[in-house]
Image (cartoon, rainbow, N blue to C red):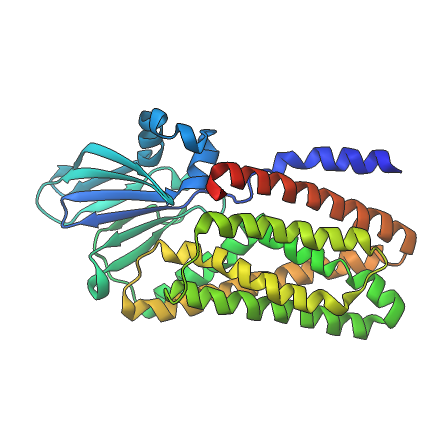
Length: 348
């Protein structure tokens, strides 16, 4: 029986990149300067460049960061020149922007063919005068400085929150590890009790990540992003290890585990919003919309998970071997892989 476990554990490195697309933030200042930023781990991972060798790959990093970006006015295309690279928590490329008269339109030509959830944030101005637009596959260009209505802000960040959860495989796998206990709980205590336990687990995770999402996005608390990503990966391994050690299920401590690690995952969710530079007048609305988007996607994951788990749970031995132990072992292997990658990428 152990052989298929080993095969399953060897299969998971194909999922080594925990997130789908790489989101860029493009800031335009006084129509004379453009700065492109993206998370360092995501950029270096996409290019296969070790953190220590980032400077030696400056040309490749600049080309990758600027790929597909162009700007133009009614009088013709803008010139983007004198690019300068900086690598810290984010990779940043700052360039000079030279345009003719008229409104500037920025376009990201990579978005129509980008993975689900990949977006470019267009930021102009600073503080309360800032404007933030979300470009994606359905809208790959926008006029710099264009203002959005409240409904446009809600729609954009609802979508962004939902997509971030669905494409954030590490968040989804942590939640699934906690939900695996539904099968044995339903067998031992009945389906109503199992549903109540699932409700407590999901609610605890929601409360945990909502607290730190608000705290971090509001800049009340600051935590190094690299260590947050390591902790998120480790949380998956802890949840998976509990399933392996207790394949018959013990849901009693799952809500507390969901609450505790939910606090960690909230910092991960907030990293997306932290890079946007939202104006004060839009920050609360965008934050609430983003969080609701996460919750809607989370409920969708739970709904799509319960039926298959309930069907498999009818056969106790199969559920114990395939889901609780086999599935958790594969997820634990991914956790180890992600922790290793993220430590090598700058967590330490």
